[in-house]
Length: 253
Image (cartoon, rainbow, N blue to C red; front, side, top):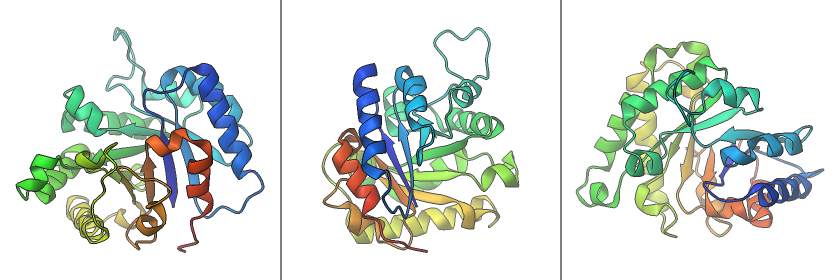
């Protein structure tokens, strides 16, 4: 079980350090039945990395470049993220796909770069409200999976792959699919992974749910057998709420 907190474009340096310190303090000495990772903006990564040392919380980045280095002003490579202490990298978030025109081909390249830097990618997939209204959610997610995941990455890399299903219409809206809808989609994702990867490594791949996860709905969502964790946005900016979600997960093993 992995609980990941995506801070998005929030927190200056002081706020980021205070938030990370509060989360570390909240879980110190407590029983945990999950892994925890937080994803600050790039400007906070180094400072937060220092705060997380000797804690049970890992560091992640919200994106990386499709380039490994060179004359690409403003880009941050996966290798640079490893240097600063990251363990995870989010790639293909819907806000990158929609607002920045990022294609699944680019997501695939980034995912391969993350693997090659010995980091773990969290590859995001999910349909828009229009897609769902047209009954195309399964087709959209299947296409994103098959186009975004590099099948030639190798066994060691693919066993570290993480998928995050985030219905675009649920992100930040306060809306979530029904439990039955989440369950159906997760089974569909697992089926598509088996087809795409020819059943190899699939049992090792975690599938997270994201999209308006909060203290009120987290227990019900995370109790589903198919769900291996959550990618949390707004609620991860509240140390008490985020920590509470992490601490109240029962052991699914």
